[in-house]
Length: 247
Image 1 (tube, one colour):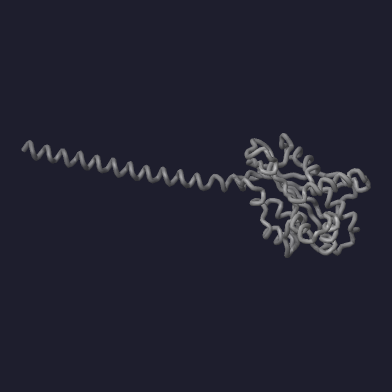
Image 2 (cartoon, rainbow, N blue to C red):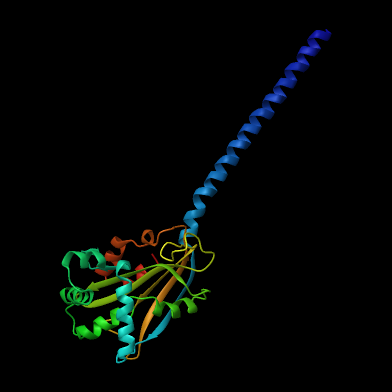
């Protein structure tokens, strides 16, 4: 009788232990699943979260030769960061220059002339473009976006041309903390800023260029990974450049 009671108690103990083990396994599995889901979702959310939108007016100074000369010097220092995009083509300016063996300014004029057929004087349009393929206008943007210090890392300039329009888009990392090597062209942060001029061939003001910007979180480390050329060309073809600002 005592043996039967002991065996019966043993079976009960094993059943309880088995239930505990199964419960623990289920709980562990759920914990791992939830943890994995969070790890996958976090970068995606960070890369899409908008932080600030805004706009600034950048003075034209179209008749100031010193300002134009400074813009030209800045352009020559930025050739490796410039890309030209039309409705059907996309190519780095540096590659264009190497292919055609022409001076940078002659080549830029040729590119604009080949694509743009509107009424704005080409020399005037060219000067407007040059003034925005550099960091200087971006200081006003960064200050308005409350980025401190107002520094831009890995800046990339995209000249977008069509038969009746010309836009300059600047992409870069901004803010703190800053990661990567000492070279500013390789540093990155957790914030990406994109700012875009209005149509430089059809300004709304005679004294300033309207520049719209969009600041967002990002998990990327290379600014090129933030620039979707196909989407940009789609926006250009559909005459909806404003949409690309927040992509």
